[in-house]
Length: 458
Image 1 (cartoon, rainbow, N blue to C red):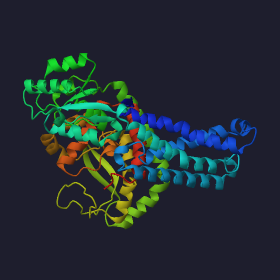
Image 2: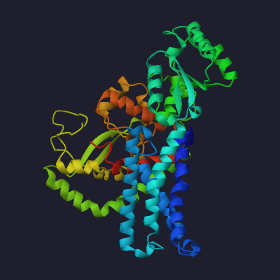
Image 3: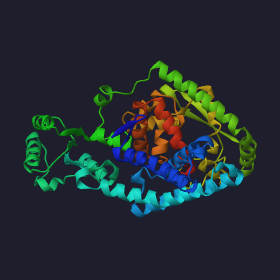
Image 4: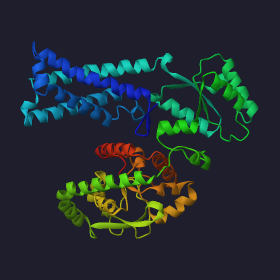
């Protein structure tokens, strides 16, 4: 896997993206050479043709990314891939038509862009089909064996089977003729049976529940010296899923690890960047504020702004400000999480939540220093004490300032139960461990995608 901005991407996904850069640019260039006559370089070099083609290439890649075509785990099958590809081309055609309507001079030669889009309608599906066929060739799939027989092993096996982009083929445990192992001798015999099978194996993933006295260390070392890759299930899930699984997470794995470094310079830089983004965001949103204020006032009786105590960095409370989206008596019966299709949300409030307009006042919290623009979402003190007792390592999310958006917000849906709070914490811990400016920029980029696709709002 390839690490970019402290997030791991499968090599196949990166190669797919890099392969589509020359494919998209080449389609528009070929259209230009076919339609511009004997001397196409004059409009390409001196009339900004190459820059326009480069801009269109970036735009097509952004559309492809925003339609989840670089995240195959979000797509059910091949037919959906082609459907989304044609959605990309449809969106591209619509935007090009709008640009050319307002500025006909944008196209340096009539029908060049139309011909380029027509070529993409053939080349993109063909490229995807060929690439998927090549990726599924047995010779290009990594053979892995999962060592373990508990829930962790079962989860790892299922994850590898569903994540097609990982490029890993799991060797069935049944093929070794072994039962449920429980002591070092059993696991050692399992590895010996694996080597005796004669099958080519690239990687062994250790997913043993309780390792004390159960790790076949000698056999694993022998395999390591033979060139096999020995991986740990927890680390593999962290790379594939972008989260730190709580199951099996021990204090030692947090203490003796890279990450979780909160230096002064990093905090100062993040604070300055968050302050600048929040100030710019407030200035951009100023024209919308009168309309939002009027809409909230007319939606239902009650105040325009909603103030609520939340828990910030190092567990310090602060008052979070939002536009009110619920009825004024929404919590007459006490504090409670929002749920899907919550009846307490007003009609205007539902629209505001869909497009995150209710969170504009939180930019003031960022300017004040209560929050950062990116970070774990702040939770209410009524829930924090309970969650800290029920979920291990929950307080680690308070090592940094909470944020308007965060890694859990772009990777997981809204949490409204103890189990969902655990799953969200796994993403928050990943963020705290890998905290960096690059990861923050990636989250901002993903947030735009989340808002445009209407994901995660309640």
